[in-house]
Length: 447
Ligand SMILES: *[C@@H]1O[C@H](CO)[C@@H](O)[C@H](O)[C@H]1NC(C)=O
Ligand SMILES: *[C@@H]1O[C@H](CO)[C@@H](O)[C@H](O)[C@H]1NC(C)=O
Ligand SMILES: *[C@@H]1O[C@H](CO)[C@@H](O)[C@H](O)[C@H]1NC(C)=O
Ligand SMILES: *[C@@H]1O[C@H](CO)[C@@H](O)[C@H](O)[C@H]1NC(C)=O
Ligand SMILES: *[C@@H]1O[C@H](CO)[C@@H](O)[C@H](O)[C@H]1NC(C)=O
Ligand SMILES: *[C@@H]1O[C@H](CO)[C@@H](O)[C@H](O)[C@H]1NC(C)=O
Image 1 (cartoon, rainbow, N blue to C red):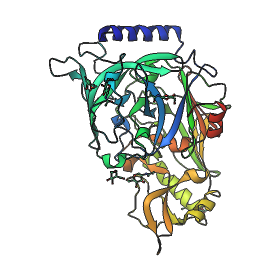
Image 2: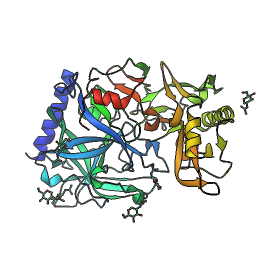
Image 3: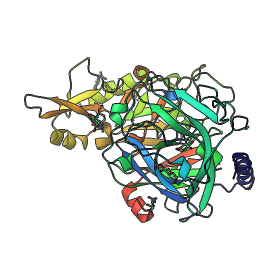
Image 4: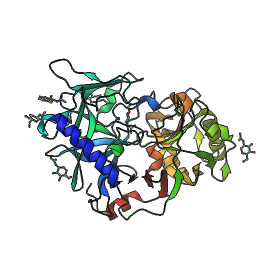
């Protein structure tokens, strides 16, 4: 099939899907949902949108396994509710380990022509306007470069994603060359397990969610390497009772407000029973849009604006004085944003973590509660003590300002063992504590 007819079919499909409000997974299994295996992996995510640019690229990502192309090729993509356009590393990319999507092996693959209406500049995710490939090619070329000096080049293409019983066409960026400032950290233990792309799940017009007219999706992230699950289109009949918080919409574009993010209203932060004294103005977007709160599966930890962070750090240190020994190295900062750090042997800190006060992110109508071992992260490679018997631990909340961000971001680390539902139809996000490994087993997902 030539590309123009493919694009026409794609848009016809989208129009039909939207009109019928059916969305993905209508014919899938388990309560109308398509189930996909989800897991945390030690792999750096590909470059992402500059909206919440972090100076430091973390290396634990939430990944989902999907099948793309005809015949289907299994690929592992970072699930990113903070990004719009999806990406796959295609053949020819210089990424190691090589686990490319082989575009030429798929007969439904097609590059978008640069004269196509799909090759227009839709902004945010593409800092550079798409342009025509060097003649005689007329492919639509996309190029991105990031604050951390990573960059990616490729083509805007379309292919089908296999979702349950359906093969759904979608546009994505097919990266053919990629350079990462943190390429040395991209080592994965098993090359077949490396993330080969990014699934853009925000509310923008080019996101996978929008293109496939998905009106609802949910996930449950299991801690560690355990199997978790992504549900597209329904709840699989397995969702626990959820508390919902409304998505924030703003009518006027503001420079620092990401309007296609899953933005919610933070109303307070609690440490144990103590609600921190943080003025409402600090928790609400200002006239520039800075200060929104995003639920973002593409970021590892959680980030708070400086004033809120300082209040949390003070109260947490105060309440944990008898349980944790502060690191006592004023210059120590993990990943340029985490400076509430402690020292201690694994067994002692692990025992103490059960007694730590819960930290609650109080949203309008819902709360994300973080307790126990999720509160602390053992910094890789840092040992203290005569014999190196102590590890360095940092509170898993970071300072947005230090990281160069102007938003609150709730990352995937704090969404472990939480059922999170994105209900686009009703403009809300739901949360409930869950045992994700069990929920995954109950749903009988193949992982
Ligand atoms: C893709 O994954 C599915 C399910 O895990 C498996 O049955 C299939 O054989 C895989 N296909 C390839 C080409 O590896
Ligand atoms: C993949 O490789 C084939 C042949 O080597 C080439 O024709 C095709 O354009 C390549 N695709 C991309 C996206 O680079
Ligand atoms: C990609 O697929 C084509 C066509 O099936 C094949 O000739 C080529 O060897 C494949 N490339 C890689 C890197 O697997
Ligand atoms: C990545 O792997 C290469 C070769 O296996 C190795 O030389 C390098 O040290 C590794 N980098 C990291 C950060 O582990
Ligand atoms: C620490 O907590 C005590 C009571 O628990 C309180 O009196 C004191 O003001 C707190 N200190 C700081 C720095 O918050
Ligand atoms: C992340 O990368 C660092 C190197 O920067 C490495 O030491 C560490 O083991 C990696 N993994 C995790 C889980 O931090």
